[in-house]
Amino acid sequence: MTSIERRINTVLGYDLVLDFYQSIEKCRGELDCINGNPAKSNQSQAYEDGYGKRFNLEQNATHWSEQQ
Image (cartoon, rainbow, N blue to C red; front, side):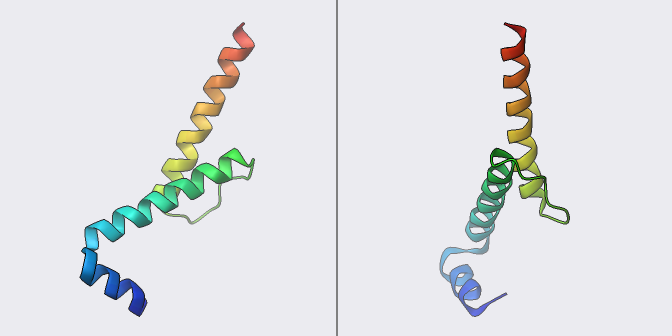
């Protein structure tokens, strides 16, 4: 943990920083999927959740557009 992270944890509280970090990781996963990049290995659970959520949304949209 860097000194900046320690200061942020002290000022804001650990939970808020962790939530922010997880939000960024989730967005990173979603962006990789949107841009057509394969899911990266050894990533956080939040990254995997974001990638998986976006992948499912895109697969469902493709399925329904092909049905019409």
